[in-house]
Length: 74
Image (cartoon, rainbow, N blue to C red; front, side):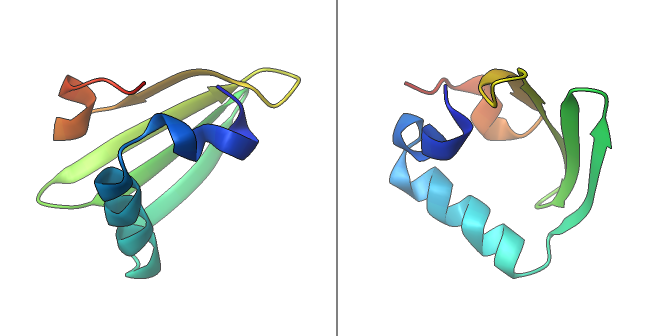
């Protein structure tokens, strides 16, 4: 999954919710830890989102302890 085109892998509803959370200030922390970006997002709970990037800017792995992570993306 490429960082520049990841939107095509997620449902539009989930993308809109994520953008709304971001614009509303629900992303309270964003840190770079080696090759991983870690964000904390306030929703109905506090969720941790981790995205690991390869040297080429490709998303090598991503996790979220939010309810959506119980599903899958394309």
